[in-house]
Image (cartoon, rainbow, N blue to C red; front, side, top):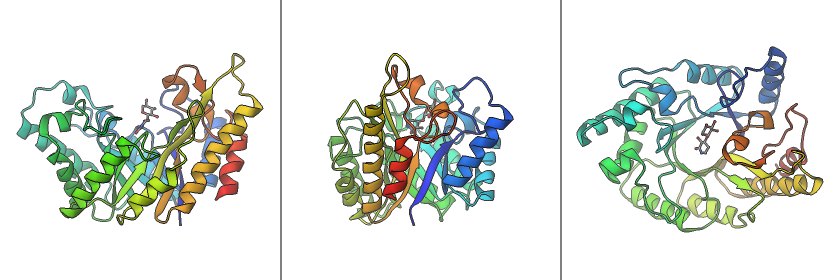
Length: 319
Ligand code: XIL
């Protein structure tokens, strides 16, 4: 059945938050995490800059802590991510490597990381955010820029070899509906499948804002990928809003947010093979939104003290 997931941070607090939480707060966080969720994603700790801080150094401690606490709680883990333009270590982005060496670096990373977590990861976001809004492969992705589009197939093959049991996904934002960006994935995935490349899934992150209209064709979009034989997932759902001066959202804003959460949940339930619905954090105190989108916030289903917003009940009712 469909997993309900959340992003988590290593020490049980948001990594953008300079203050560690008190032990009471950490206990309250863990209680909600284990009561409400059957899947977890490392919000940052399985990204290159965390796992691979120097060329010859891997740092698995924080990722391992997430994986083992998930295992103890009977939760599956989404691995995030192996191939991205962002949150790469300086040694990689600023290194002066030839194409052959870069290819070796990527293969070594995938072999080592996917191999390390072999059997512990239900699904990997192999490639994250590889297309622009126009549906062009990103020039700011080191792998695509230096190695060309053929490297995408290699990444999936290497990941499959390193953990044959993990489902292998593409993942991106603004691909909730049918648009040039999701069309680009639809075309690419068909090509890869025709060549026998092991692609198992397509995921939309679902970073939504009530500033914009709801992507009403979400279910239709996921369904066309399901019809290719893929699993689908919603991997990073949050619904941000413009915060009033008071910082406290209005009742209308909370209702609109709840409606977005409800509609996403209904779409996930409606699409066969949508295997998980993951929230990008479950309480506002742990959300990346205020630090990233000036003036917006309150994007999760719970207030800072873990009390429930209308959005929480909207998800619950739609499941
Ligand atoms: C974000 C994290 O939430 C932040 O803590 C971090 O500072 C930046 O990355 N798409 C993704 C995620 O695939 O990895 C991003 O996570 C949010 C957008």
